[in-house]
Length: 315
Image 1 (cartoon, one colour):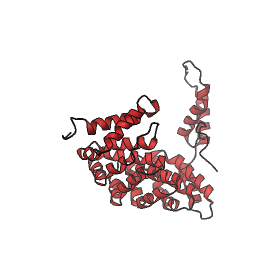
Image 2 (cartoon, one colour; image 1 turned 180 degrees about the vertical axis):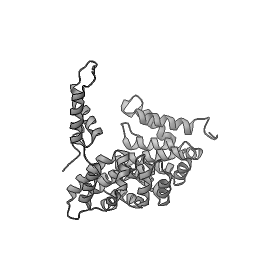
Image 3 (cartoon, one colour; image 1 turned 120 degrees about the vertical axis):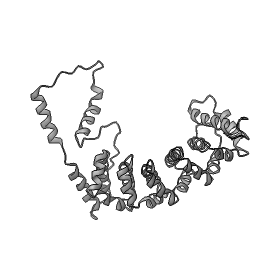
Image 4 (cartoon, one colour; image 1 turned 90 degrees about the vertical axis):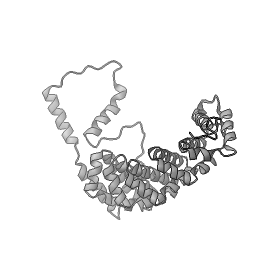
């Protein structure tokens, strides 16, 4: 069953918070164009609504355990497992529920999901990891202890939809949690990011560039390590002037802008042909609204790396 559904259709509620959101989304088109005036709710109506809400309340832990049982049952088919992962994802978007999911033993489904022969189950499990880890040090640490980072890097070479989710899961695990980042670097993670930035998989390339930029901005030593790995030279190879909008070109230019925040990055960017490439991009893209960002990146790099006041001097 495809659970992607129409993004304009509100998801069915599973808890009180979800119910309120559902109600607002479902009725927003019916709102009056003028300001609403609310009167105090009378006691009888308040009791009625309380009872109605109680009837809709679900036992979250019970629902999570039911989903886990499906996922751990060898007789469950892949479609049912994928649906169960979506149910878990719905719940763990709440950080407290994510932590409770670990406490009830929920992380036991992670490794089998990553090893599944079903691409949908692998991708769903990676999305789940991302939801659990994002801005959640408690879950980031416990996911680290599962030692799944090597498997996540392996899945970067999986089919495109899985590879994209693998990079998202890695990003959620390592950002703002130094133990995860250190472990990722230790297994060659920075080289993996560089490899993904050079791929033809556009979404994977963008996610990789975002993670690299984030890490370089947050940690100068990480930026310097990327530069030592010849990141500047490898990204410059993807800079090919185009008269039209080119997503790969824009990603390369934005990545170079981050890498040239250091003197060594600038030095490496002063390749014999790079100045001409940037000048060509500016000439070809000037006045084209769809090319505005790649134009601005090229202008910034040209000024930063090749202006008279910067060439031959320290920044």
